Image (cartoon, rainbow, N blue to C red):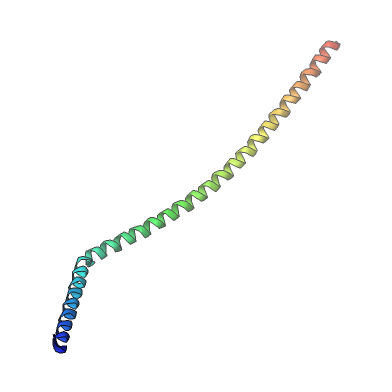
Length: 109
């Protein structure tokens, strides 16, 4: 094999390798190509996700406001309950004092 034949053989091998690489690239790009309908589906899903995140944020905000309102209401109710219990305790003490006074007066007479 002389120099010219070696150059042509090397060129042929390199050309075949180039063509095989180009064909593999073309085949992979055809298989993995993103179609317009796929892009439309992705856009639609992205919009739905965005809308769902906004609704979730609104729900979280509403729940936080509602929780604060209910906590405030519960604190007020507890304060009213404590005041009512204290009033009831005072009324019982006063009733006991009056019973004792009546018993002492009835025994003294």
